[in-house]
Image 1 (cartoon, one colour):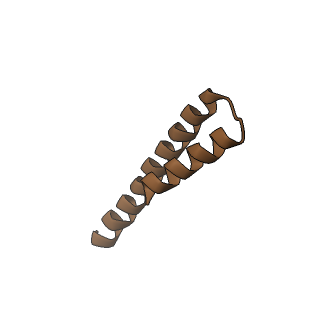
Image 2 (cartoon, helix red, strand yellow):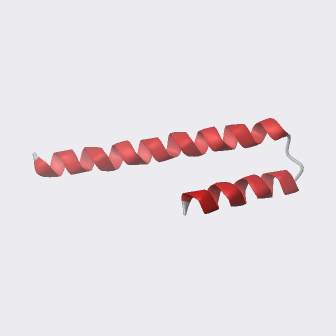
Length: 50
């Protein structure tokens, strides 16, 4: 699902004529979002155990 989101986002940006550097920012933002979500869910798992 994540690969589909990234591919669709990058394709949409390039179709809109956005400069190439924006795709790198998009990938970076998606990576930061994924890590944040992972850490939040991992924190919930730890608090459920303890």
